[in-house]
Each structure stands twice: as C-alpha cells, then as structure tokens.
Length: 374
Image (cartoon, rainbow, N blue to C red; front, side, top):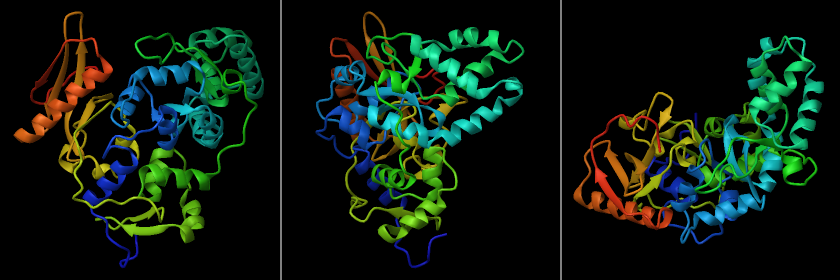
C-alpha cells in the first residue's frame, strides 16, 4: 500500500496520463519504427492489430510503412512480453527476448511430462540447425525432431524449441494485406546479428513507466510476465515519484513524464483486439470502467474496442466483401449524439486510411456476440 501522504491520482487522471504516453490523446508525428520502440512493442497475437494500433496513434500513418519495416527486417514478430507475440524493433527483439526467458522456462515446465528423457541442450542445437537451414513451421519442427525422441510428445518437442530459442516469424507472415504460414527461424539468423545481452530490468522498468505509467509493481509484472520486480522498483525508488490510486496501491512514475489535467479532452479511438493500452496493467480500470469489465470479449475471443472520452465505450468489427465494407459499432451503454458523431467520424477516417479503395458503411447496434473478432 502507498503511504497515506502520497499524492492521489484518480482513475481519470491515470487514464489521461496513460493515453498521453500511448499517443492516444493526439496522434503523433513519428516514424512507425520510433513509435514501435516508444511503446515497447505492439501486441501482435493476430497479424492485423499492429497496423490498427499505429493508425490510432500516428498522424498520416500508412500501413505500407510498417510492412516495409518488416520486409527490411527492422521490425519483427517474436514471442516476448507475457509469452505472447509482439511486433518489436530488431534491437528490442534481440534484448527483450532474453530478459523474459524466465517466463518461457515456466511455459516449458508445463510440458515436462512430454519431454521425459529429452536432452534439452541437444534439442536446442538440433532445432537451431533446422530453422537456420530454412524457416520451419511448428509442424515441420515436430516431424523433424520426433525421430530423435520417438517416445516424446511431438507437440512438446516443438514447444520446447520455441521456448529455448528466440524464434521470429518470417515474412510474408504479418505483412499488410498479404500473409503466409507461421514459419520460424532464429532472431540471430533473420537479423544477421550475434546474440545480445538481455535488457536490464532497471532500464525496462523505466521504459515501461514511460509508456504505461504511472503504474504499480503489480502492473509492470502483469504487463511483462516477469516476477519479483519489487526489488527493482525499490532500487529505482530514489529517482522516481510515488503516488497512490483510489484503492491505495502505490504507483511509481518518471519525474518528467506527462500527467495531463484529468479534464483534458480525449478523442474517440478505434483499437484492435489485444491493444497495448488494454493489457498494460493489472488494474485496468484506468481504461475499462468496472461496469464493462469482461464485456470486450467472450471466452477466448476479444473484440476491437472503441474509446470515448478515454474509456472503453463500445466494441467494433470490420466486415469486408467485394461490394462494401461495414464498420459495426456495438455500444456497451448509452452514447450521446455528439459521441456517436465523433465515433462515426473516426470510423470514416479509419476506412479512408486502412481501406482507401473500399466503399463503406458505419452502423451502430447493441452489444451482441460477434463470434470471431476482426
């Protein structure tokens, strides 16, 4: 708990501070690569969300810019934070991946029964040789590794390779309006770089606060998948400011980081499923009102979200066919006329940028189960 005399930050104050650092209060004039670095990566469990994340954050964004960075191998898709796929700069791919290795080790232990009798050092060496000969799918890795350990669980063998090696998804996977199977090779091979030391926990905490702060130790651990970070925050305490939230939790922040007035206007924004701002904290009430908790998804399906006045207000999806594309917005509660018009205008901007040749329609409805997210 925070000290009682620590300054209090309301949920609205935390909302505006987070949106400012996430480039969601106003679109920034930044190159896509710089934005990817500033945000410490883009959650990329699906292939299209990184493009929509940048659309909502950058002025004059062109999806072709991010695709070009991927083709030039300046950004890559790799499993890092929270053991999920992120789009990172090449630099971050090389240094964040070893930092989060403890989380990959925990994942590997889940499959230990299927790996009985498997020499993990030998598996690592064999898998590296295979994926550096040419990128391999997980199915190909299973088939290639199984003859060496025929009694092992084939899936566990491939998962072990993915946990033990820094594997990136090679293009055309992830390119805008293109695609391909998930084929893997090592970051060192794809980026033509020797292995790099892990990013320091201290530097990563500071970067996290710059992109997601003010935040608690628990918030950072939830975002990163790392544990035992309290000692890092305590080590950094002399150079950080401390606050408390409405629940009494201690929050840390960079002294010179922006903390806008809570009444700063926040424009409507369309965010993809799994957007960074929705997953960056253990306590997500700074963006998701308590009444809407769990309503931006069903089971394992998560929908695109619409922010109005900075907070989750609706879910959305984009349906495309040969004749017309439709943006469907499902409010989670009452939306005033002015807010609806703002959301409609933002939807039109989205279509102009992301599908410039499409005829489109914007529709409002009531919350229903969409099925698979866009």
